[in-house]
Image 1 (tube, rainbow, N blue to C red):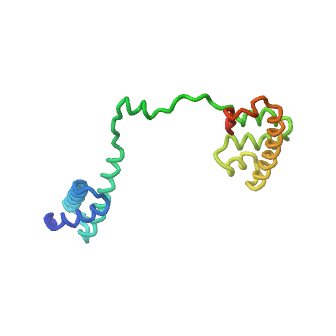
Image 2 (cartoon, rainbow, N blue to C red):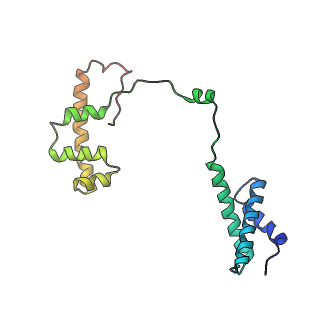
Image 3 (cartoon, helix red, strand yellow):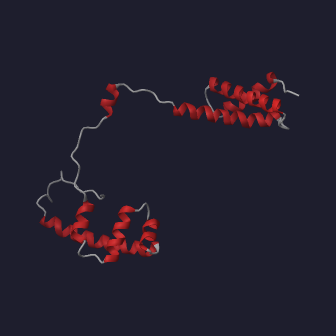
Length: 174
């Protein structure tokens, strides 16, 4: 037996209205849920508790409507795009290149492997696994490498011609 849509539509609307704030979207989600209930009933697999089933399906339909709204893109005018673009800046020199250049001779082969893994792996555990170490040991290796890098950088800054220039900044990375 087909449930009365007039009686169930407000139930679906109220359930969808809890998810979406727009009345129009809530009505659409409620109608979709009622349509799915009608299809399920016509197939012969009607739910035992149609009101509860309808509430769940209405909430899911409202979420689907929200997702489809979020996926829509709005075209942006050329003047807005130009206003959002930042002015071009010269790239800053990389501190990682300096560290690899000046520390290569001071590091052991195991420490070189550790620094390469730290720069190329996604996380500490992955880098430690790549080197065949425990994460705790890998962090110790990185601590030793960091101390050596700081001392080499401090020694280099004393000799650097641009050490007093605040416009020259270093950033870590590759």
